[in-house]
Length: 127
Ligand SMILES: [Zn+2]
Image (tube, rainbow, N blue to C red; front, side, top):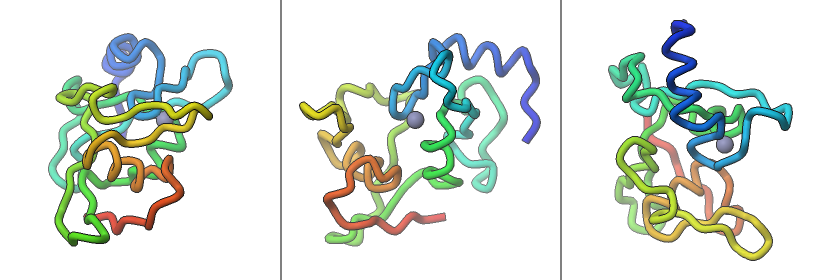
């Protein structure tokens, strides 16, 4: 989806040119930056400042057009991390090896969805 340059720049500045999901700097490390629609376009998400998040290609590719997941144990729907309303440090932390792990259900299931936590079962993403 086309995003006007002025909107792309505003979103990038708000995110300090880092992925809003994994925190990687997207300025100098050669990782392609993309804009993610937090609420997917397929779910009537709009191309607005509030609904766009700066993302690395990996996180955006993993998230696809999802905004929630199913817990494989409880089979309940769990929302994914939303950088507009959630504090990253509330839901995630880095373990001593630098891997991102979830602190709560939002972080854990976002981790499932983004494959940043690989030692737990794969979660089925809902569309
Ligand atoms: Zn990322």
